[in-house]
Length: 203
Length: 203
Image (tube, rainbow over the protein chains, first blue to last red):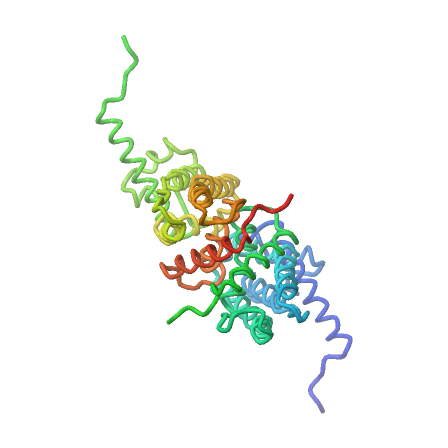
């Protein structure tokens, strides 16, 4: 006899519960902060029993890391409009959208309400940031190939320059962050890159 | 009879206790984080009795806000070297020094260990940031007057562009932050400003 396999229906239900608990965990994080986050409240919000949560995640830390990891891993499309100016604007706008949307809010809440000390959260933040940098690199290499940017322009430097003013406004200055922020970031970055200020640092 | 005046010795001792308790509060914040911060441990570290602390501050929140407020208010010299390039480099280096020094560490610890939700902390962060922007404005206006930067260059935009990559590295990318970071930030900002990308946004 074969070992019992979960039926399609069970798998479907499992995925649904998982998604509901993830969403509830992120929503609780945004509303109450990390310090007040409890498995009980997450279960209540997701409409499941707390033993259902504990069966899948051993504690709130692993639940949170799992929920954030899944949402952060979602693909962000890398623009390829044929011109560096429109590519950078599209990239900056997608950074703004992510950071001001539900996932971004949850990540910021995790960082600023006491979860930042969890090594998994710090690691996830770095990893996701590095991963996005790497995936956006073609925007820069294509622009150099088309002769729009100087030879030797460093993709990582350029993309950090693009992201920096958006993060600063959101995290420190508490200024509004919108499409204008994105377009200005793209404009500044392009000017610096064209002037050759974003070449790889001499090592 | 006159009301009793504190003697010079009492005042001197009061200021000393205040400074010691402030320093202990910031050190505890950096070492243990906000969630674990207790008046007992601060008193122990400062070498005073906890009633001495409670006589001056009603709880850990007001102690922390007071300690951070005092340290954040410390004057940062605004450079005036006669050339925009060296002025911006000096400014960027002083941002790096502040953020990587004991006060900066304490501020970051406050932000990332659960104290960010305290309205006083959020307000202090914004206030200090705005205050520094305002005080550094002459660096930009002098450069425009000397003809080193285009007419209409916006001081706040320029200074945010200067600070942004430093904060990004420290908060998100977790890259090392040092004089090279500062010099690159100055270089990028200058290139963007000279290209006219840091003019005031059209409103």
